[in-house]
Image (tube, one colour):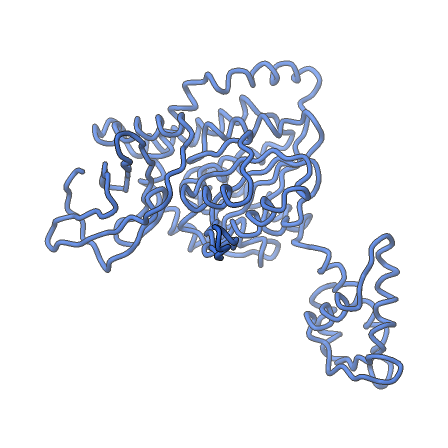
Length: 439
């Protein structure tokens, strides 16, 4: 272990793979399995190679920082090699910080354009910022899932393969983890998961991971061991997903509809894909990303605080675009206006929605027709029947309609009558809610 001087504050447990602390900034690390397990760790100003769980730094006052004890999980070999090379480069200080940032910015966009085709050029800075975010996501309140959806042979798998050589600590698309091993890997490594699935509805474990992975504190619970004792797996970690159909957690994701290259370019991109695994430039790019994100973490954190909502980008959409916009401000400032306009366009076109939102909207539209009645209201069965007509082929239960009424906050009270449950409604609240939703 290299002994350096840091002012350590209150004792804090840190994850050895990736974490953030106010007193020293971003921490990135790997596990090395030899005669005994050790950890190679980088922060903005220090390098550590430790084989125990407690790091003691002697400075003006001796402080102790505890590394969280996590189960060893094998990592991608190319990631470990790139990290070790970055570690050596850092110790020798063989680079200029500002030049490194410029090189990372141009190289990541260049690699994306070289190996992956999309008809909308604004997609490239979006993917670049998401990839950089896999090194920084622990400083954000939300980090989106990247969903690649489109027809066959439109580049989804190619992009996942490319990301595998760029992002932090990748778990490749071919690794079929199930249930507890999946969640243990998420908790132990905090990796970047890259999934290529045909029907996500057939992977309940993956659905659970995606529901929990976009916010700090998100976890999945499972019963383990002979005694079936409950265990909570913390799963806040980056996920990229290639699918053929829309996913149910789309409000927590940013979706890219992949497009095929023009016929005269299809063969070119197909041939280029073969060189992704052989490209030395990608290895150098990832080493530079490790060094650069350590150096610019605080600048990204400041940009994250300064990014503001707009008339078109607000609410949950803003929460998930905000980290990418902050990264863009620091790493690709010349692309910021372009990415912001793309985010606003995306928010208008893909406003967060799910089936419950659609039921709420139809319930609201129906009760608007009741506001001239006295008393303002109707039987729950009648409202359910009217709403069900708007969803042919789907069964809308009275429980779902009742939940929609409660969510909208427009109910004065439910009253049991011989004919059924009568819903007394608040006319003023119905009109206010309708203005908000249907402006």
